[in-house]
Image (cartoon, rainbow, N blue to C red):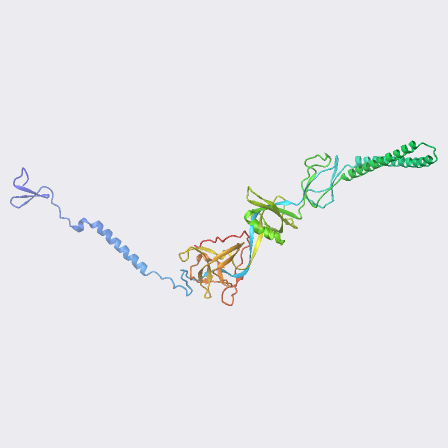
Length: 451
């Protein structure tokens, strides 16, 4: 019952009286069921179910890929992987000491005049190669020609006086015997003769000095080499005190390179030096990519620089083609030792990674059935683009040098068509040409990690 309405009771939106009849206080509404209340959600579920069925039918009727080729390997490729290979061959490995060097001339001469005078002629072209003794400049010779003539005249005059004094001396000697003159007069004449002899010797020295000065008017090159930029022009008055001189001549053939190596290498190097065997030295350009010249070690310094812990060395090069230039920076490779009968492979064949779960240095070994196997190897000394193998391979084995980033253990490979095979069925070494990078210092290999 509702307060204030004793004959009715509340029942939702309907009012029921005591007689059981419904009395509604609002317009009548139709009852709502479960479907009516969740109609939108059901529509979405049905739509999603239809889309799922369509997707499943499309996937079931999708064309299947063709079966894998018969050469499919365990690495997951659909076919053989094209690779380049190289054969393990015995060879010699050179142990080299790298160094940085500076090209220096064996003779660097600043040509100066030895007399004063006007520079009358320049007889060289800048940058010209001149030979030892060749005239490269001339000073006005006329003052020195006159000086020579004066000295020669004085010499002749004094020679005549000496001849006259000697005749008088001879006469005096006869007169003394006859007691016609005093002995003192004879002694005075002898002293006069000796005086004239000294004067003539002085005159002869003056003549030679004038001749030398006249010779110095022709300035010659003291060495065979290349002249640089001239320091004075024709017509200037030059003296021996000029600081810059006339021109600088550098000897280029042969030429030397100064470089330093760590003191740790000195002991082994000196053993080679004491044996008297020539020690080869190679010079490379700044980028260490092109060899410039071959030479030999000529000098080892007599002490170690305590500030750097290095010892200075000099190597000499013939430099017949002029590839080395004074003060040029070069990379030096000093041959310290030669390891013979080593198993050698290209550096490009070596890889580092964990193909079997263990980090190691390995190569892809080509099998007779044109598949590859992961073969761990122990590396030795690196010599340029080649590396010695201490263990893990045998002579005649073939290893992958290019294309290894797409390989896995057991993968099938396609060998180069022109690659010859050894009697065992493996590719020969000619199937891959090593690079041309210059030899470096002996070091352990650092191959790339496979993808």
